[in-house]
View 1: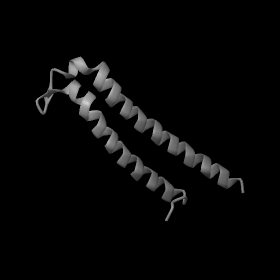
View 2: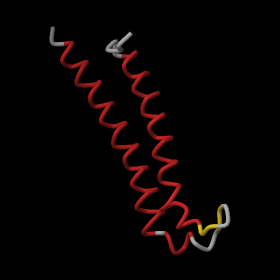
View 3: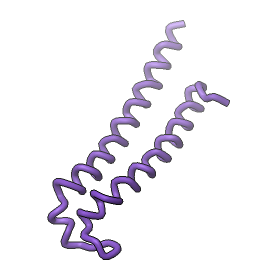
Length: 87
């Protein structure tokens, strides 16, 4: 039986790794692009608005929604791999 706890430990490590990567991307886009790098990005325009402003107002929301779908897809794949899916 020691195989099952080890297997679940690997599952949770992969789960947490996925979370850390996706949250890091979200942090980079929302805080990095929207606040820290807003001034340099503002020299470019998207939809008529400065890019730094766009990331702060719209871009971080779009990226967040995309990351939700990436998370769902990754977790479904991980659940099937470790046979813990809800089918």
